[in-house]
Length: 294
Image (tube, rainbow, N blue to C red; front, top):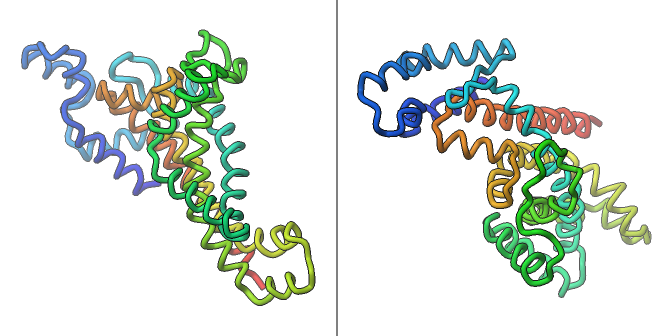
């Protein structure tokens, strides 16, 4: 997390311009810009700014937005519900599809393996924006099943209108499933090639029993690491879906903060995503140690 905080801080420091330029509207005099930078602490040396930000984070106070003046914790809490709803729904839809694609790409009939591998490659290669456009064209414009824009009424929780979440959830879940299946199919193939699995097949054990008893424990650690990276990526990776479909979540907050050079907000959201990934990877390492014990 310390390394992640340094990388995040340096990346935000490398952004062209700053919040003072945005507040000045591009027409402020040099003296006015200097005053704004001094008020926001942007004129201090980078090490001083980093240590000050890190001390505030460790105290649980990430500061306030340079643009709106609102506490960052309040902004994150206000938008976290939408992102959490999208991430949970995308995982609930994407993980079973990921497992099915990975298994079909390894163990299905020849035609099914070819089809599954083609879907995996295509799904992992397509950008989210292309997936979103295709879903809107088919499920909204052509068939009229779901609304093309997912703007929730003010004050309503994300789960109050599940029909508004279908398209953004699919936009997130389909690439996640394809990318995860592309990584897991090799691990599944390695486990299935082991002698004790072949022995179980010769003894006539059902495929479900083989998958649950032999394959799942062996791929639990890499699958958990993949899930950790996926969850962390969804925290910030919802930006495309939230922006395209008009959802006010953490991803949309991150995009807006980058556009307005609201550096403390960018740092807080990015550090939150890094924390989710690090926590998941730590859990995966602990699980790997447990499964590796004789």
